[in-house]
Amino acid sequence: MRPVSDTLDPDAIAECLRQSGHAPEVKGTDLSILSTKGVSHDHWRIGDSDLVLRIPRMNQWGLVAADALAYQAAAFDRASKSDHTPECRAILAPGDQLPRGALLVTAINGRTPALPDDLTAIAVALAAIHELPVPTEDKLAPLQIHRNPVSSTLQVIEEQAAFLSDAGIDDETAAGIREDLAWARNFAGQGEPDFPHRLVCTDAHPGNFLIDAAGKAWFVDLEKALYGAAPIDLAHVTLGTSTSWDPDCRGELSAADVGGFYHHYLDLVDRERAAAFGPWLLPMRRLTWLRTITWFARWKAQWSGDDHAAMRDPRMAAHIRTHVDRCFAPEVVAATRGDWLAPSILTI
Image (cartoon, rainbow, N blue to C red; front, side, top):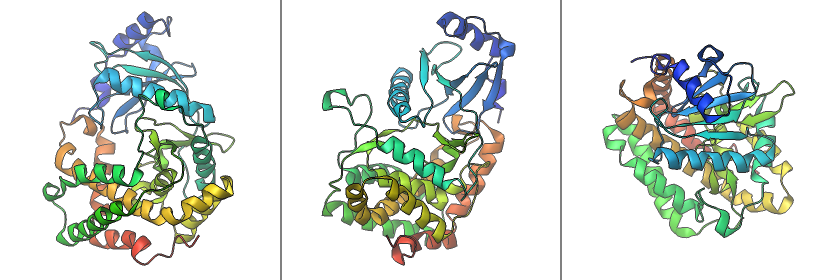
């Protein structure tokens, strides 16, 4: 596996920036790698400016490069109105040096969250993002809208579940996943939430947040943002599949930690919406776990080879392998499923 720093030429990227007119004085020596641990993106700091170059290496939804850039730019533009996400300043079109192009976004100076201490700040950020007005029908594009979030999430789960048989997982684990999948298929036929759609982060694991010097949380990865059900974000922050995903942001949450996070978020939104969310919190948690664990199956079956773009960072690749294997362990799967099979976390 070749480190990502060997595959991009700083001088050539600096030339792309100069030609774009967005950083006319930048030199290759002004560029430094900020992070390569994301599955889909690398991030490069541009000198001492307030800008970061967000460089896609793949798109998990299979979008072509130009469409993926336009999608993310729109998501950053809309979410930034919450004052809890970076702004997108410019799009660099795909070319020889940047085959999938890049986004120029504002830098957030912060640290990775400490769990469980920063869950309150994350709840505040999510509430602000979810509070944003939803555009009129003719202005929703290019962002997706999950008009029926249960069936839309199930569709994603089904597509990913096709990889379960090739993921090499334990029989007991596979049986538990398939039991929950059968539940999801049945549940999807029983109706959809009637609360309004909101802009949701979708990939809201704690490692996608930064905490600034004032303790404010910023969500920094808008690749999968869409209009859908806010409780899915709440689940994704606190499930064990998420809380140890990032090697720099790992923690075990107690039932009290998770319940406290949900309570704090619900205290931030209006009473009517909090009441509407109530019956859906556990079902959406179950669906979100299924969505994540089947993504792990897809990763194992399709993306875990050393030559895949998702595995370009050796440290992150090793961590993902360890984390995914742990999440598939029968005892971990059983403990996670206890949230809905023997619920003690969400007595709201």
